[in-house]
Length: 45
Image 1 (spheres, rainbow, N blue to C red):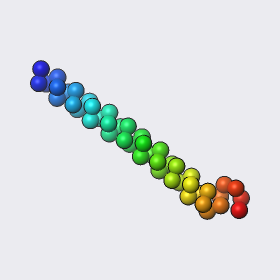
Image 2 (cartoon, rainbow, N blue to C red; image 1 turned 60 degrees about the vertical axis):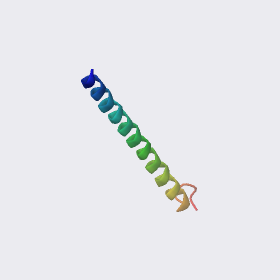
Image 3 (cartoon, one colour; image 1 turned 180 degrees about the horizontal axis):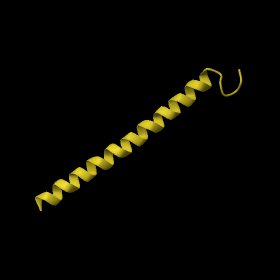
Image 4 (cartoon, one colour; image 1 turned 90 degrees about the horizontal axis):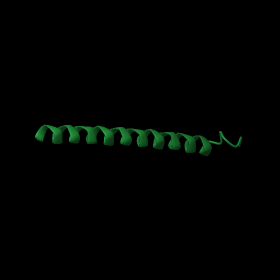
């Protein structure tokens, strides 16, 4: 019973870290796109 709880906790932490990594990558992508837009790379200014 304790082992099942430990396994569930490990799976939960792995799932959280994976979703946090995906969110971090998405934020980085949004930041890069907005930086390019501010530099005038998107609209040609």
